[in-house]
Length: 90
Image 1 (cartoon, rainbow, N blue to C red):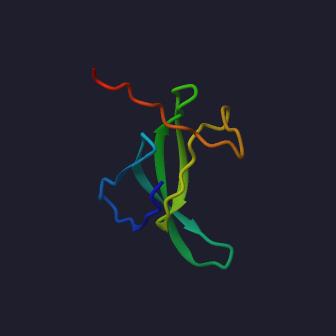
Image 2 (cartoon, one colour):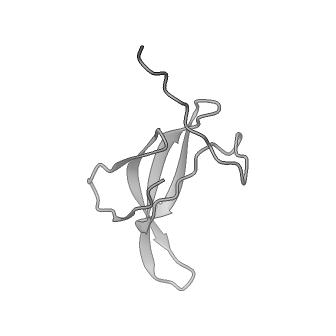
């Protein structure tokens, strides 16, 4: 898994793929930190590999990309999602 640090800008249309799972930014949401500084959070959407339902999560706009893999209903803390193996062409 490649770890990437990225800055987000409005309207950038960022899409990422991690272990075969696609993620895309659908918006930036204003956020005030505990220390009072203003920032934005990126709203990402993807599909749960277990139940195939869409889910969303937030990340800071400058971060190391380490996405949620499953929805809250299917979450299994500590267990990694393994990519499906592709069948070879004979």
